[in-house]
Every structure is written in C-alpha cells, then in structure tokens.
Length: 440
Ligand code: PMP
Image (cartoon, rainbow, N blue to C red; front, side):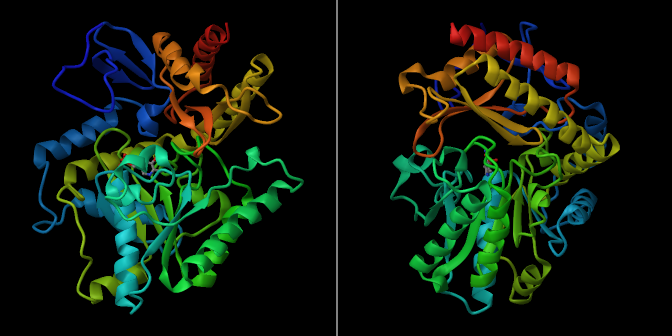
C-alpha cells in the first residue's frame, strides 16, 4: 500500500492509500481500488464527487478570476449565492456572511450575536450556552462550545469554557415519561441553566438540530425544538442553529430547522454547501441585527478568503445542481430506504441497539445489552474495528466512540444525497459482510 508522505501529519499515524479520483458516490485509490463514500467524507460531498456540471461552472470562474479581496471588489458569484441562500432561509434571515468552514461559521455566529448585543447596550450578555455532547468546531472559540472532554479536554484553560446543558439522549432514559415529555424535560434544562447563570449574562444558545459527530444522527423529540425556541424568546436569548452538517439538504430538507418549523436567529452552515468542491461556509442572520451592526459602524469580523469568487461559484453550482435534479427529494426518499435497511440489521445482529437519523444523516449504535443500552466493552474498539473491516471491503463509514462522556460506539452511514436504491443495496451488502466478520 502506498502510504502518506511522512512530512505530513494529521491526528494519527494511520496510513491511507493515495486518492486518485472520484466519480459520483465512488472514490478510487491509485491502485484502482474502488470505495463507496458511505460518509460523504465527513458529511460533505452531498452531490457526489467530480460532478462535471459543477466543475464546468467553476472552470468558467477560474478562467476569469479566482480571487478578488472582498474589500476591493464585489463579485457576482458571492452576490448571487447570497441571494440564492437568502431565498432558502426561514423568513427574516436574509443576510448572508461567507466563511470557509464550519468552525469559522460558528464563531461568526457567536461574534455577530455578541456585537449586536453590545450595540443594543447589553454588554452584560456574553455567555453562549451549548449542549453536551456537542461538536461545534476545532478552533478555540468553537471548542469552548463543544461540551465534553473528548475534543476540549487537553486545551483547557487556554480558552474560556462556556456553560453547557445536557443534550437530549432520550433513547438512553429509563423512565415512565413519553418521548414528548422527555423532550420538554430536556428543553427545560436550558431554562434552569439560564437562571443559574443569570439571565442578564446569557447571550445565546447554540445547538445542532440533529447531532452529528457528537451524538451520531440523534434526533430530539419534536417537543424539544418548540420549547427551546419559546425559552430563548422568553429570555431574549439568541437561538443559533449549527447546521454545518445538517444544512444543504442532508436531512431531507434544505435546513433541518424546517422539519420543526423553527426560525432560529442565526444559522451557521458549511460542509454540503461547498460539497467538497471548495471550502465554503455561510452564516445567515436576521436583517435587523445586521442593519443595526452596520449602522453602528460595522461588524468587526472577517476572514481573508471569505466570499472568494471561486468558492462561491462552486456553492452556486452545487445549489443549482441540487435544484435541477431534486437531490433533496432523493435524499428524503433514499433516507427512508436506508433507515429501514439499517433497522433490518437489528434482527440479524443483537449488538445493534439503536438506529436513528433524519434524511441521509443516519446512524446505528452498538450495545452489549439492548434493554439497558449498556455499551460494548471499550477494549473491543468496535468503533475502529468495524470501520476498518468496511474500509478493506471498499466501504467508507464514519464512527465515534462516545455518546457524550459515556462509552458507546456509533456509526454514521451518510452517503452522498444522489445515492440510488441499488447503491444502497451495495452499501448494505458490504456492511453486512463487515458486520458478519465483526460478529464472528
Ligand atoms: N459544527 C458541526 C455541527 C460540525 O459537524 C462540524 C465539523 N464536523 C463543525 C461545526 C466544524 O466544521 P469545520 O471542521 O469545517 O471547521
């Protein structure tokens, strides 16, 4: 196997073959081996790899100009993409700020809320409450919002940690409540936290509408979403939806907030927006907030590559491709197919304890006991074992070892949103083969 060059480093030493090319839901290494991209990278490549229409549109922009600093020029791709995105947002969120990735989007949302509060004479509001478990990014500011020791542990006290509330993991609860009652119970934890912190100090609450890397496609009861919005309104706390993973169609609607009819105050997006064609993220905000900031002298924030014409041309081409081929509709339909196929695995494998998700943000969790939902022994390293077995067989899946401070192996199966039913069949065949070997 060809290994990665030794001068390059990421998280670990695990060598991987060199990537040669991509085509639709498939990736090929230099030896010609084919892989199904069953996790769309890290839930990024929503419209599949090497889409010729997107590449052709990017090429047109490349031949004109790849960069023009935003303080020196307006560009059509950034203006057009902002207009298009504004049209896809819940009513009122029609101002768009471009960034290059998810962490930047999250920090932009935070800073926008904070600077706006200051312009309103609310200097005392600075705390951003987040959930644990959560994942909001790797930069220090975003990490402060990322509850749990897994990602943040060794870096304290370099950053100011923010207050957290427990994210609803109602499938683990053993009480007599209905799911809806549990949703309310968890949402009310936010009220308690706001009260405990002092409502005059709380600026915002941030949440992933469907957990991604944090809880593995976990959806809260419907009642949770509505009650969270009500509590934020009651205390004048901004509600920020981190749709970095869920946005751009991944859950079967353009934004996950649409499933519950919730209008957040700010939305952060990335991943599927550039869909792997270019680094791109966006923040959508209420126009009254943005206007107030601009009136007060401007938003004190920006990144060099923000809104560069090449990334924006990619984003625009990706959105057009999604519309032209009803890719979000396909995601909703194929999400149901995949979910029922994954549920079917529970009959065959007693160690699959929970299947969950929305659209093509789908996952399953392994347990040693379905009744108690006790995890598999840590030493089994199930989360990496199964990923490797699948990888050898040409299927890429994405896993995590914790479910929020407590052990628990979960696996995200999130192919590109263009996946077809026969291709889901291919995914399931390889996954079953890998699971059989795992179980043996
Ligand atoms: N928020 C969420 C919900 C994410 O899933 C991620 C990435 N996994 C981020 C933020 C951070 O994005 P990035 O890695 O592009 O900075």
